[in-house]
Length: 555
Image (cartoon, rainbow, N blue to C red; front, side, top):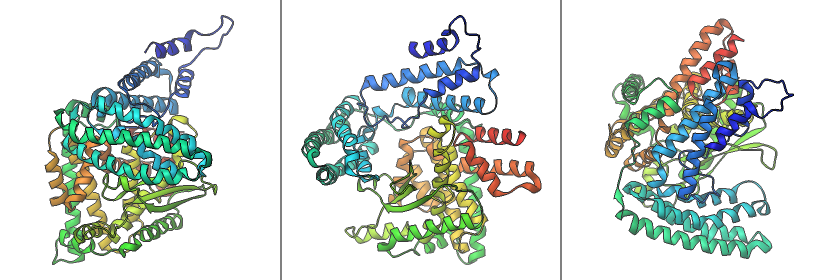
């Protein structure tokens, strides 16, 4: 703490007597932000951190010190982008403080200590083996300490966390037994050193698995909920939205029922003899051949990109592309569908390449599992989700953020805007004629209902308004998910409180901004102008995005 307060003091005092320059609040902010860094997010640490108690304590002390330094700056002297950056930085730090001091996921979730799973991403990232050796060796070397510290710090038994962690840990054997040895063969003289580190890491994993199976269940039994007060502090201090958990929960249900009304109305238009639930069941049976799942996703990614360009909906000034690839095996139980990875830099072809990683169809499954998979990988979900993840959703937004001129906004973002932007693009594609027929439109509304439900169960579970089983029932009985898919979906919310409200809440905030912008611009309004301006602002809480957008118009 003293170190950061000293920095604040020196901004004022550490000048020679002959210097006459006054250090302004803007100067103080610039110096502060020069030392400010992004966070791995939601209780996680950098992969080379040992994840010890002292490490977590130090992180909290650092966060509190940074908050003190930031709040010592006189905001009355800040304006425009500087004032917005100050507010953004404070919201980030408030979020970190809540995670580190109140949520403390490292006491309950064993998965946080298995950072070794990221080695697979390093192996598969662009570049030759030589350039990856040191990074992989460092990660392997720290793995035993991380897992050992996990066994020391985990003091609360959350049954579902234990189940998911055990699945993840046991699948880690594939990494140590196959992926790393195969990589090591490509490293020449480093092979022996890598294999020795791999052996030690694997032994540590064996001990950790034994701990998860046998010792963790003997700890005090607990819950994943972060609690009413903490959730409200997160909404107001980190997300900067004008909701309490109670009012957001009510809003979630109101919009859920409104979307159900839209589904019922559209279903009557498609086939008056069937309910929307019956039609959705039919639509979910219509999909690509299972062995062509990757190719089918790629086809609609490319079509989404063509649609964005043809209709001039947003500027994409970079050489870029999106590839659809199979998801890593150890991650397949963390989501029923997959995940998206935005380009972090240009690849070997000097192209920004993002990857949409989906769970592939697997021939070794039994007949029931195969059928369940195909029901959740229909044409509807592929066509609707492609714009969300790629064009002009996360892929495009990620490129703008990656190339933002202001460091703070380049390195930091928040789900309530980025995920809201993804869902907004599903709505945008419906508005601009991308979906081939009304049956796909119906699927889009049902997928929006899913995001409505996320607001309900995220708030509900973490403030004890809703149980885990009630959240599963909401997804199966009212949204139409199969139980296994609903369970994986809800599991993600238990581990990331607040994240999932970002989709629907963020989309609605963006639509509000669009209407305000349209009213201001009048006849000069265009979707492209709105989207370009918004993307150039950054990835911040919607209230700050709106403030910056209106500031830009005022200029």
